[in-house]
Image (spheres, rainbow, N blue to C red):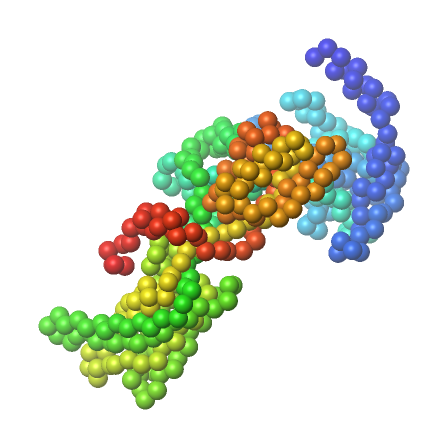
Length: 438
């Protein structure tokens, strides 16, 4: 700790005031193109203008909102308007000195302080006490995009609600951490800047909430579709002693353009399937849309046309036509060259120039396609590429290994493409349909 006190004194004495250091920090305007900087002053007699730049959790005090005053003054009596237009009383204003929190009477421009236990205050909020400043917001810094993901699940039953609350508090503290509840894979996936980042997050969950979780790589959100037109047919007939079940469905399917979704068309003529049973046929088709026949992934970009069928005046029921519709659709899917679709992501990888060859070679080995390269000042290069998400899920650690920790990357979903046949065969081999699906 030698020299820390002297360093802090130098900062206080010689560093610029908030106005001198960054006079364009605050802007007004609802849309980015309408934003314009606002003028403010360190004058303590003017309305309060403060920025909450950090939220932390203290084991003894609870939630701490740490802010810097840029204009006016903040006291325990100040009624502030938060970023959500709620008015709250600060009540107690603290100076922070390591783990010690000392209550203070007043904070003026340039001071950093904190308030505790006010749920309405969040990171990034602008605290002010005059409605003329309602539209003012902080010019947000650009944070790195969290790309390293892990699927998490509580080890103990009944901790599902506990884990969402605990992670929600961490998200409020850390803008480079995010969570997604994937509706397709039914997984809770957390994303951070790397393996070490997420390891620290998990330790925080254990220490703060006594929460143990299991982790694994996230599942890939594959989809299924068809490439050809095909016909499907199924007759459902069941006799159990009393009234039976009967329904017969003829349909055809055809591919739609990528992203077209699903379309159901009724071309029944002559009442071969009574009108009250057509919705049951559609329900049966939609049952298979949720879990396709190849590997159990959702089906998309398919048009289903029901054009014929048969019914029985006594035994025909909704359940019979629902089953017949589902199995006829499955029959057609298997004839229509059904394929798996995988998510393809756009990537921008920033590395030292001398590592470009290693990066492009590595991506080519991951079924990636190089889109171009840009060279930046300082001996850096940006490699633009597209690659299957399945191949680059753990790219953070791989990039670190190739570049010695000097590389960074971003990626975002681009589109879905068919999976190569050999990869599809491997995925399909792992699929075990439930008995009722067979």
